[in-house]
Image (cartoon, rainbow, N blue to C red; front, side, top):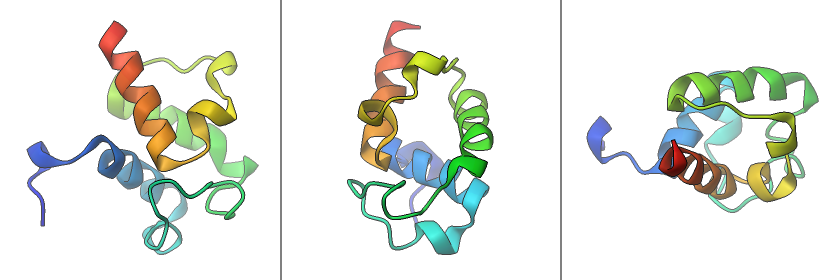
Length: 88
């Protein structure tokens, strides 16, 4: 198991998503899988997921940020988080 300090950004996003929808739903998801198309998360969980992303990574997600480019996959979300943290 990886030490928390060695956790990749994608692993961190995966952990947040697991906390919202359950580890069983996220376990088989590849980093580049489209999480809405694969029905890993639905509209009912999006608000909670975004709130946890904000809390976990110390950033604010605006409505304009909720695009498929930023939130389509674990990899896309990790890129968004890294980019947002870089400008903070």
